[in-house]
Amino acid sequence: MTVRTESTNLLRASISRVIDINDDEWKLVLQYFFPMRLKKREPWFTAGSACNEVAFVVSGCVRTYLMKDGNERSGQFFFENEWYTDYSTWLGKSPTTFGVDAVENAELLLINFRDLERLYKELPKFERFGRIMAESALWGLCIQKIAYMKDSAEAAYLQLLESRPNVIERVPQHMIASYLGIEPETLSRVRRKISQQAQTTTV
Amino acid sequence: MTVRTESTNLLRASISRVIDINDDEWKLVLQYFFPMRLKKREPWFTAGSACNEVAFVVSGCVRTYLMKDGNERSGQFFFENEWYTDYSTWLGKSPTTFGVDAVENAELLLINFRDLERLYKELPKFERFGRIMAESALWGLCIQKIAYMKDSAEAAYLQLLESRPNVIERVPQHMIASYLGIEPETLSRVRRKISQQAQTTTV
DNA sequence: CACTTTTGTTGATCTAGATCAACAGGTCAC
DNA sequence: GTGACCTGTTGATCTAGATCAACAAAAGTG
Image (cartoon, rainbow over all chains, first blue to last red; front, side, top):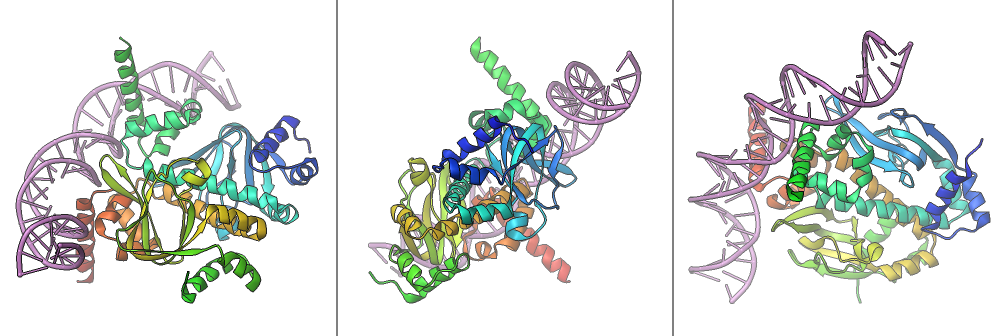
């Protein structure tokens, strides 16, 4: 089972930004991770199934989504250096709430929940890493949910452009639209309006 | 500094639901917590200030809110047995994003972030408690944000009635409206429609 | 290369909910 | 007890964005 060193280096860096780990501890951590490659549009798992791993995105982009009234709605997008898991299976012993698939060809490093629990026991400070990552993600969502809810379509788009330019640049427009809670047609019109304004301003 | 036993019992129960703690460990935990009482409408802190504690709600109800375009928007509501903090200060070294005030007279137990860090060192398994609480809250928000975003006003209200009846029963309507991202007038009309439908159905 | 799928655009019309306005019961403070 | 404000209701009108429809460039696929 080969994992490129660049990939694992990225993982180590992500962890080291939060807790200090020496080489021995890193070996302990690394042994549990295994790679997964997804081609564009290929699913990791679908909604209503099971997710038994936590994923670290090495490269590419994946997104969460679910079906609502017959069409899919994108939840969140994850790029290189970001983490994701669907807690439904592990926390709630219930089917996954969302599906996850690749927006771009993606390389992930996965760790099984059971192995993660083992790692928490063997290396208690990793629990600290888990806590801080969860807290950061939680706080980000709190702010997003309340501060930007109910903005106009244009404000929501501009806000996304500002805070997550990757999404605007690398994700198809119709997915961005469903992420923002608007229709693709509306997003298209918003973009036209903005680019026209930009031209007018320049002249 | 006197804290009623009932209050601390509630706190201990909340923790024990997640990790096992014996009497010695409990003493260690308890020493750091101190009580705060808020009267209805009284603020704990305001948006743009600082929040240096994590709160456990013993009784009553508090909410987060922020000002948006001149009027306040309620973020989340917290009742007895629930936890809240504004991570802006501690994680981001920045002013608080939200304000928090009491919807009902409330009794809180607070722990200072600095003491919490101390507690994490003295009782590493408390880090586990923190992680699991953060993960649960994170997952709840993920689901709320994506699964229920963009529902109609009526669907959003019914969903809230189903999932958090406490909010419907104990929070003023105009706050519920801003929480749902709709206007008080709309909520009033939605409620009328639902109660009329209920009557028709009964007959 | 032909054919299908994915992705994005533009126009016309429709509607849920916002906004503006007036009113009224409750309750809190002095 | 009375005025202020907190809270909720109802009506009339307006608008952002949904919906329906048609089109078209790009990108995969065999």
